[in-house]
Image 1 (spheres, one colour):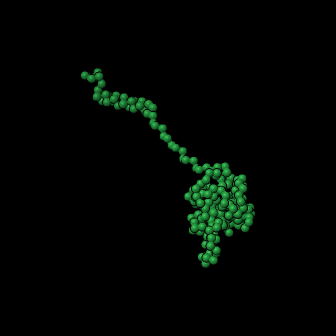
Image 2 (cartoon, rainbow, N blue to C red):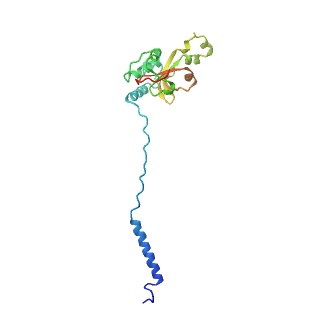
Length: 196
């Protein structure tokens, strides 16, 4: 028997170590404290097209890269107002045939409020720019301010139009289009939008 102690010092330290280890094991079995839930927000949905806008997009795709043909209204050949006429016919809207007549209908839209499907119009400056300043100076007064070209706005400053190279996408920020911009019309909405 041990004198004066129940357990000797080395044995006591071993027992304490063993008990500490057991407590550690038991603590490892206990459930972890609850963590606050991680909240992740879904990304915002992309702007969705209305069914009519989706149909308009599909109709425009049908005409993309169609050859230019004066008076044409089919994917086999189309001019600028024919493109606008045919694309909008495919979504159930009847528009006049010429650029000038198309400019007289619809809701005016300011350039700063353009949205997908609006029709953008240009004056004769775009033709004058191509023919040079000397030829442009020979035209009668007021001639350059008449609308003579149009296209369908796609967003991000781009529009689809029938050019001499065929139906293509152009930028409103290109000098010729920026300087000849005459106004825009909205045919897909009934509410008036301020502008020219």
